[in-house]
Image 1 (cartoon, one colour):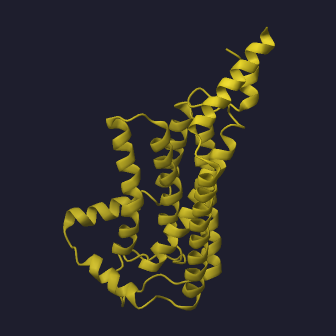
Image 2 (cartoon, rainbow, N blue to C red):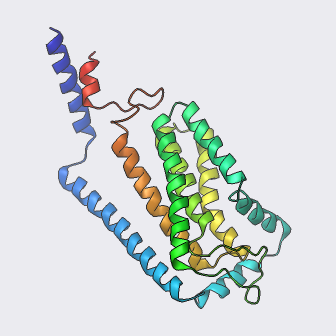
Image 3 (spheres, one colour):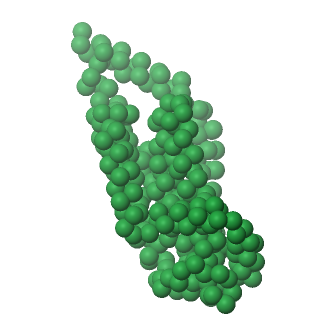
Length: 257
């Protein structure tokens, strides 16, 4: 009797899963689209990195910086300074630990693990690429520089980290939380940080626009990898986590009814 109940539960679960699935041809099409986008980002990033390694800046870079720096209002300047300030040590470590801890304590343990990995990988990859490309920072004789930094310029570390880390937080909120004003606030917060940090780095004269584009491309690649790892590991690890668990087929068999 117990065996028939298990079979019934498994069949019911599989039937529900089938009803939620798109046809095989559509799945293949979506997979090709995703792979094409990732491949295009990789090629664009590699091409941009190679060009950046041979040129201190591109012809449009100073023009874009001048255009953004024309906005001299105090509120805008304060906003740009604040967005970038969050990305420096030690505050970025404190902020990152806070969000990782919050996600874990909220019950999303696998999400917290992947979030931590996204932050670490984006940082290490950024440092590696900077050492390979060796692109200098914008000079004061070309644009207004708020603070002279000694590290290399390509790609922007702020942008790459924000895109990978806060982008994954955006992803978590988007797929896990129910529609509510809290969810909306979090989506706006994380999305705004990702968007504004690129403008901020250019406005402060600490990166060229091409550095920022490189940061977005590199961060998006880390984010895409994090999402794939998250989806792969969700039914395999932390299947009994307190919130938003995703048990695999073996767990369904073990817990009938």
